[in-house]
Length: 111
Length: 116
Image 1 (cartoon, one colour):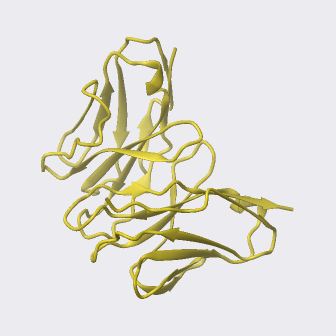
Image 2 (cartoon, chains in turn yellow, purple):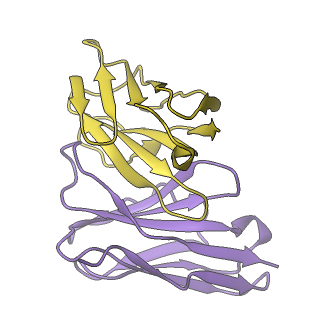
């Protein structure tokens, strides 16, 4: 099974860059890596997705090394409103459809 | 446009009763997923539907759980003879394509189920 491993929690201060790394040793060839953000009492929300190298959008960057066995979500200059749980998501192997969420990283941004 | 909607938003029931949870996916999305999230924990995959194909039910925790979907529209998740351990938030998501690995799932707000 394509499981993921993330740090359980992280603390940061406003204005800092936060990097959250996800390990996915069994990622399949055709799997993409997707990160979601979840606030309390809400469903997860898509942040960014990538297959290899680097992807950047208006809210985050995603770094994926050549072996694709890990990925790092980078949040530039976090604010208090970035306090949330961040999930790393990969498929469960080629030709299947079970998407396994990681344990999630609880990010707390401090003033 | 409308996102994924779920109803009811909250449900309190007594142990042993049956409950039915509803999910309205984004129009045109062929794939639909159900997840369970217990308090303070991550998401647990339950079941997914892709178009008119037979659903993958292997994530359902017991035979008390069942789900249906008519075509590419509404889905219902039914829990029979509810138990206290069924208390959780049940999240539904939909996506455009399944099987390529690059689908983005759009989640609903969830149904908070409390079994007394």
